[in-house]
Image 1 (cartoon, rainbow, N blue to C red):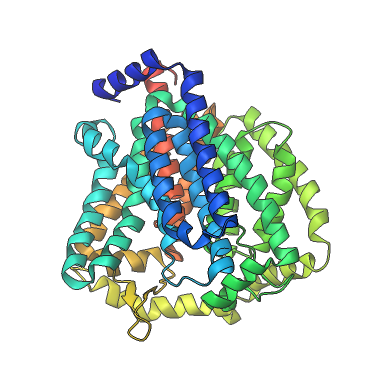
Image 2: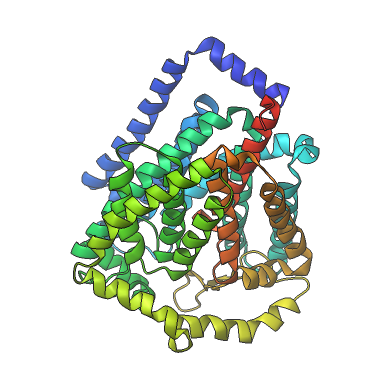
Length: 476
């Protein structure tokens, strides 16, 4: 953190007490919630497609300057809940193929562009190089996209690719406040697992009408299940199964770093909904994350984590024996032993066979926005999903953009892998595990974009912030 930022923070502290700033921040957040609810139930639900993103941006801007800690939590919750708000609005006033309300989380994140532009040059020699490399790769893709693709898809692609980088840099820049940021993120994801897990179970058992409506209109029944009770794959309040799996994987790994009476109820609904999402990639990521955490902490913390895992297992396994939950979970686990006949596995393998050589031979890349195309029949922008972060990088960024972008990610992983603070701070170990497992999943998912990218870049940045904080405190 530079002297200018310290001066700005000191001015806030001199004029407003922490209690006053917190009260103001919560009043603004409450006003945002009341406005959203009022519009929805007073016949102005259609207006929310514009009002919600605009007011979310203004609230994010206010919190960024007046209460930076609550800004972090607000940002995560906007990511978690905006898709549900979009489904509720669609159910009430009709389907919106543009999905314009989903821009809200990106607008809130883009507030941190101020941090990025102001402090990146001075931080390059102090650990900021990975973020600069990532930015260079994305900016190159942006320039190429302006040449080959329409402006609106290019802008949409820029939001997807750049948001995780600038938000992660913002977290890293505030390394002096690492303890409070760590505690706040832990609380945020604890409540996230509890609330999203509970709604996920409700979604699976009841199949709410707004979720069924979205599933039918989006034509995603082949990947997200059938629109009926006990037929859906759980995606809770998120936009689809993949983002939910990424969020829940991170949240469940973070629960190992917390204590308190909410841990076990959150774990019960969290693990059960995580299983019902049937997200095998994230199941594997969770297992790898547990291994990484256990291998990097002291023996005392290892024993505590093993005890927590055993207790959670005892709580969750009986719930998975209830029909039809047991049938859904068992059939998904059985697919691991029969991957050669699994449709999803064959589709991904076929995609690699068809596209890998093409992607690697594309030196310049197709630029940002290449997966967002205008449907000539409807005139609407539609996304073509590429189930591989590796293919997506080379198709979009080409060699000239993928090399710095991948270089930034690799540098981040190599750097955080050398830290020893995880031995006594389990959050560092968990954050590192979340970041590394998210990178490993890029082989079969575009996990560097949207909320998955926020998790990937954000938790690696938190591990870096922790290292710099302890280094400054003289703690090793």
